[in-house]
Image (cartoon, rainbow over all chains, first blue to last red; front, side):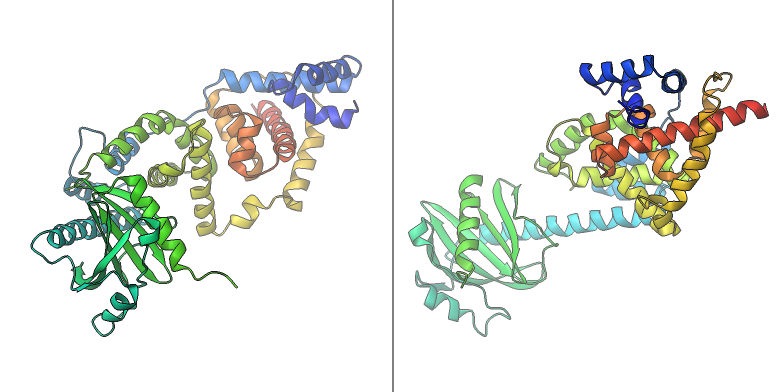
Length: 252
Length: 184
């Protein structure tokens, strides 16, 4: 081992990062090289002094309180007190507060959309307003939406994949008209809502559970998709991935 | 109503159990990187907010390096805001290299002198004067107690770079320490 190599390696020895073989190499070199031996001793001393002294800082109580507001413990607190907390927290910087507020507001909007999706789903199961157009033929359901809504939802027959197309209807979520495409799996109804402009930017499809229903959301080609059902998570995810795959035209 | 359904509440509780024990670590790194209590507090809070938001993406293992990596990103954004980003983190900045080389050679002469007398507060002050890239590595090693591998993960630098920066950081710190002792 040369002095150049030892110069960096002796730190790894001090930090106990070397395996036995390399540690022996460095020690052997230091035993035969006064300069490296002195360095090893010097940095060992520095390391020990840094370990001995308390060089840490303690998080102030105000920081802990701010974090408690962002991440409430099990015993906390409604969103109302959460927002109040931000208004009161004078040490929260404007930028941090803005990003938190954005987060809360978006979450609120998500919750509202979820709530309305659940209501729309329940409404569709009651009375007989599951479908406006009753057809298992995608070529009947798709054109039905023309002129009724300002977007062209992909209507895909997934009967072969185990999800039977029942029909479509017009519904409203978050004050906007949405296309509802209705599927059935065994006795479970799936409402697939297709809209534009609700939905935060999602990366991967996201599954959530609201009031006992599973909700799967994803975005594709500028459209927001929200599938809701009392179907179990696995099968709803299966539905989502089969729909997505079928919605994409085969390459080439 | 917030957190109905129990899902978010579970998540919040799991997050608190896993992440809150490292709040002092996060705050400490923020203090050393930003050198200012108010900014450090904001950065630590932002770090926990982001970490909570992305908690699903945390795939087990030690959570401390994960949190410190998030904190470091928050601090880099703060550097950018202050307009000192490039100087702070340019990997092979000639300036830092030559500054290091200068003190490094000084540090080599008085190896036999022993360090004494300096208290924790003085050491903190001397560490605060190190160039960013070196300060960050020595804090992660000596104060946050991360392994070389973990420091490499947090800083996005190869282990070899971590090792050479740490060697330089110690050289600079030791030189500063000896200078401080002489001035006492």
